[in-house]
Image (cartoon, rainbow, N blue to C red; front, side):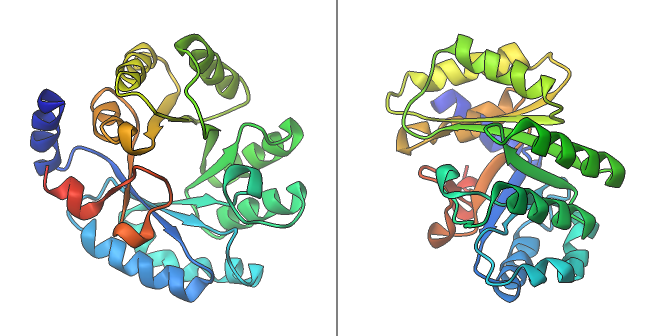
Length: 245
């Protein structure tokens, strides 16, 4: 762990590690305020991103006014997310309605969109078409909330997501043993020479080190909360914490 932290410290100072700040609010006004805070923190990290969760918005009409994020899109990319309850989200509509939210976000200017691998394939294909038409990137994600499968299963998840049209494959697993972090590092090493980009994350307190180590081994980004109250996953580091490395 000490060696990883030492390397991370050097990389962090030169702003090489790509950071994504997740923003989960109930409406556009609150989200816009949080985006403003994120822009301040990311002003020296032009290759970073914000992730906006739209499943909590009071009104989907907010999606039609995403021009308020135009300032953010000049310097950092916006990832759109809309998750159902099975994905630890709160969207209560149908699957088609959920995908429509993501399509609207893309049409309104989001450069990336994150959709679960468990979504029906025709819906993913339709979302991919909208992404391609607008020059956006499709992240296909798979979460294992309570466990970590073996490396063979995780590698197969990557292959499947890639075959479904992913521009970036995201794999997040729950870590309950310290040594499982080493398995995630090995997964990153195996995927590092593959054509499709990947995001690998270890959730939980014992997976915290993976949020530093995996980006050093090729993972596309690491998720960093604005503050302790803004965390969207267990084990997520805050901006203050990662800045101290």
